[in-house]
Length: 194
Image 1 (cartoon, rainbow, N blue to C red):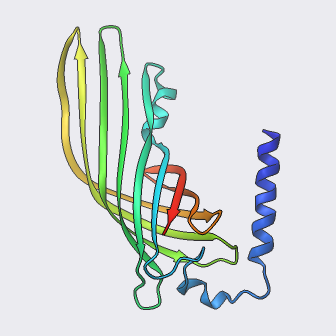
Image 2: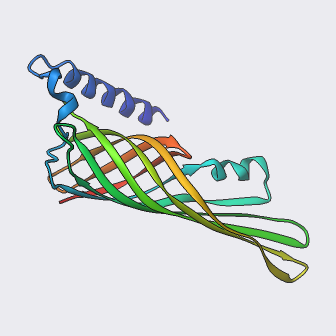
């Protein structure tokens, strides 16, 4: 835990020295991409994270949940001078519960499109953005009671998500991603930039 605190403090100090750089033109931060992203740059992210189903095993010891997982693809295409990127996502989540003579499992598949608005900050290789996902969600729940299995719930609906995130690239093509939002509270993973 102590190493994590030291790493966190070092990261804050690193970012704060860059944020207060005197030679940075703050009037241009709203109309430029970060991390060397230009018009036509493509990013591919693979991430895993936590949503509301992750808390269920803590509330009920007989339940289980596999963390949310998704893949996303983006293309940087500005509108006027505004640095937007547009893309698609595919995400999935699994969970369930067990009892004496029964078990329940469920899965969800979310897919659709998203848009991100990028902001340039004076930290090299950092791309900060806010975004919105919209699409569809399909799911199925299966109950097994006394050895008899039946489909309990099958359905589809509208899916939406809002988030704040950042990419940090270690080199020209490879980096990491972290996002905070709803309904996926936190996710992290790897990012490829082309």
